[in-house]
Image (cartoon, rainbow, N blue to C red; front, side):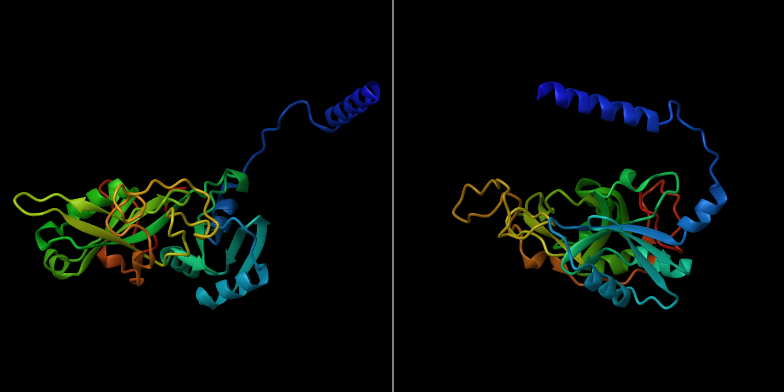
Length: 279
């Protein structure tokens, strides 16, 4: 029996060797054509531990994105899709208007670098708009918003109006890239001299369903298997702030306004079109 298995393995190995080229190939790319095509494409992944109804997903996408000129949706793998647009203005608007929550699941949208294959695209990072609530007026500054954004995620960009408008607003708003596999941040404690510390609450725009136990996007509280450390007090809440996780972390979406969008210092991206988020 063992000899027979060995013979079969050798035969398979020999067949594979015969069917593969001994040396790799150096192929010439068509850079211009690939770039033109990629400017009409987006690739996306739904963050979910289970499969979805693809027909329902495609129908919801077409309505939510309000596409006028045409949209094709191609399955690329488990919960991974290629979106083809006829007009770059609709492609850019869709990317700019994120994040998107489809059927309760977060959709990570990426530009497709034409030099990469689908397996090389990193879907772990996704841009989120975070509203920062509870800051005293004297702390509502562009530099503070950028500092908070850097602590929460990467590539922070601040929705910045005038200093006066920022101080009068009920919250300040920052866009950051977050790892979709990590728990959401609920906020932080602001230290103040000669005054009691105050809790600063984060709220997320277009936030998908998430686990109120561990704060992750990919599953519900009932399906949570994470070992979550609890407060030492009697609240029984995860150790991440005054309110921990719950529906209060959701915020209404604020429409994108390029004139109010202040990129992180040193960011050379254009904001008369949606920012090209790093993969």
